[in-house]
Amino acid sequence: IPALGLRGTTFVGVALNLIAASGAWLLASRSLEEAAIATPPTNPPFDKLRAAPSAAEGREPGTRNRKKAKPPAAADTPRTSQPWLAALALGVSGFASLTLQVVWTRLLVQILGPTTYAFSTVVAIFIIGIAGGAAIGSRLAGRATNPAFGLACAMLISSGLALAAASGVDWALITIAEIVARPEYRFADVLGREVMLVSGLLLPMTLSFGAAFPFAVALASGTDETVTEHLGLIYAINTLGAILGSLLAGFVLIPAIGLHVTIRAVAALGVIAAIAILAVAGRGRGRAIGFALAAVVLAAVAVVPQWDRALLSSGAYKYAPAMRGSNLKASLTAGDLLSYREGSTGTVTVRKLTGTISLAIDGKVDASNAGDMLTQRMLAHVPLLLHPNPKRAAILGLGSGVTLGSALTHPLDEATVLEISPEVVAASDFFKEENHHALEDKRTRLIVGDGRTHLMLGRESYDVIVSEP
Image 1: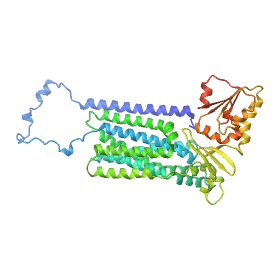
Image 2: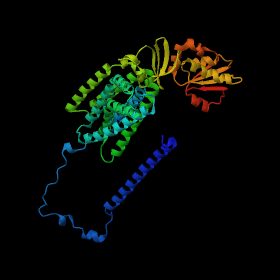
Image 3: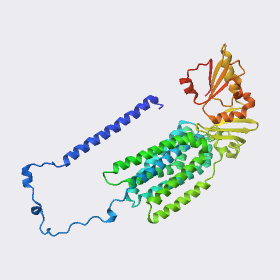
């Protein structure tokens, strides 16, 4: 993107798709040619028919009374395929993997900082892990006599490792704080250590997610005539689960139950799916081992510790270098956490420290009733004083509401404030004294949504638009 821009990068993706399509076309053409060469003519010439020996002529001496070959033993017969069981299991796996990808992107924004590096690191590790897990799983699934047991174990292990990663959030925060606080570390040093830390947390879990796919294919595969149909089915259900996971995680689960409970719920769902697989298709000693492992992971779901919310929302990635004192964690968590809300767009917190109330989004302070007051007020006063007769104003970003309150001291007919996060609207209640109860003013029009979209698609015009974000 820095080298080619968004448009150029998009064209790179298009070119790669065309290269892949060309490769597939060449493979298909070559396969057709080879098949045509290998297939004998259906109507051979009459002279070749005459030259062909009869069955009696072609029989070797002493073969008249040779016994017919026995049919393959039962162990060699193809195992019963269960495509719908495999498909539903991979639907749960796809839902879990994408839900956890969204959750960990949100978590790492608070651990590494709200930059493109956090998102890119999570996506890269998930793709590498799933691909590597699929490669490992394909070797194991090819030798497995009971692929249902392997599929159940892959899902149970991924659930257990998801809980283990969640229990390491506090450790990751302190580790990152110590890294960024060291003045001798340059950007590349910090980024490299962050990637290693995130890989240690997430790579084992993603490998397990990837290993589930080959076991599901082995469980679903039947005859050569149906293998393509079954593979398409499990891939489609897996993709549908992934889509639902990404949508529900961001818009429903995180705002409703929070990041930590979402991880626990996804882990529990994986355990339930694994138990169902074992109950339907498990057999022998493997079934008992699978149920025992499921009991262990369910116990972990119940006891996995909650992370320190004050530490998670401290903005360690940004403020650790400025901290003083021997105990870095105590410095980062100082003060009283008045409010903590996890929403679809970010985690919004309000903290009180030595009389100062601060509003932070993903750990970064965006408003306060102390050092930010001058900026928050002047954002409204300067443009409204420069305009000869302002009547309608639009403000992008509510924050503490001080900018809105300052705008309302001018003779406006209407002040429209556009805030994308409902959690910020709730947090502004802690600043009612400073913003003069701005949201309760009859001239205020609050729109909870994306301000840029509103201005692009709406037909309304304003005398003044304030866009601090």
